[in-house]
Length: 408
Image 1 (cartoon, rainbow, N blue to C red):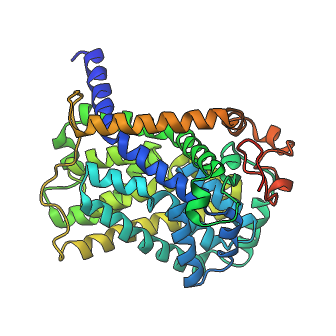
Image 2: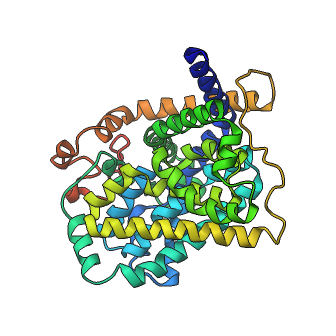
Image 3: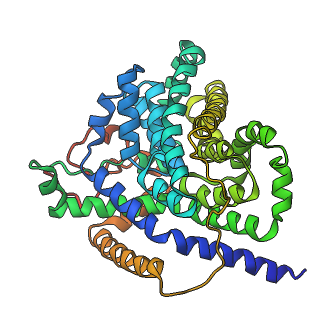
C-alpha cells in the first residue's frame, strides 16, 4: 500500500464531495443572510422568555431562520439566555439554528435523498420537545440559577462576537424595500461572509474526514460495526452509536453531511443517520464550551439530555418512517470520485461563485474585513472595545450593524 497514493485518493474523494455540495451551500447561506438581514435580534429575545409550547415554537422557527454553525449557535444561545430567554428556549433556538436550516436540507436532499431532509425536519422538532421535557425535570431551580450566573461572567470565545452581531436592516418600509435597499444588500453580504467564515473550517474538516472514511475504511468493516447482518439489532444500535461517532469526529453542522453519506452507505440505520446529524451539538469542543458558559454541572446535564434526545429522535423517526415506506431501500448516497464534466453541477457552481464574488466585493467595500479580524481576535481585546458588537454595554445600541457604521 502506497501511503501517498492513499492520501491522494482521500483528498480526491473530499474534493469531489466539496464540488458536489458547493452551489447548495452558497444558495443556503445566501437565503440565510437574506432572512437574518430582515429580522432584528432584540425582537427575537422578547419571544423566548418562557418554556411554554408557544415560546418553544417561536424559538424553533426563529432558530431555523437564523442559520449558524454549531459554535456560533452555542454562543448565540448563551447571548439570548443572558438577555432573558429561558434556558429551554435558548437550547431550542440552538438546535434549530444548526439542524433545521435551509442549506442543510438542500445538501441532504442532494447527497442522500429527500427522505433524509424530511427526517431532519421532522426529527428536529421531536428532539426539541424531548429536550424541553427533560429540562423541566432535570434543569430547574438552583442549577439554572447557577448556569445563569456563570453565563453572565464576561466573554469566552471568539464566536461570541459573531453571535452577538445584529446587522439586520432597521429602516422603515416593506420587507422588499428594506431588503433591496443599499443597507439591505450590505447586511446580506455581511451575514453571508460571516456565516462562511464561521463554518468553513468545519466544512473542510468534514469533507476530509468523509474522504478518509470513504477511501480507507472497507465497507464490510462498517457493515460489521453497524450490525447490518441483524436488521433488528442494527435499528437499536444505530441511534445509540450515531451520536458517539459524531462526538469523536469533531465535525459540526453542515460539515457532517458528507460523513453521514459515507456512514449510510456503510450500513448505519436510518435512525442512526438522524441521530448522528443532530450530534454536532455534543462534539468534544462544544461540551467544553458548555462548561465555560454554564458551569460543569449544567454542562454535563445539557450534554446528557441532548444525547438522550438525539437517540430518542432517531428511534421515533425509524419507527414512523419505516411503516410509511419512507426509508430508502438502496444505500446510494453520493460519495463520488473526483472528476470535472460540463454538467448542471458545474454550471450552477460557476453561477453561484459569481454571486459569491458580488457579495464578497460588497463585504470588503463596506468595512467587513475589519470586523472579520475582530471576530477572530481575542475576547479580552473585544471586551474592552466599545464599538465591538460583542461588548456588553453595546448590545442595546440600535444603530450599530457592524457594516460601515450606517444608522437609520
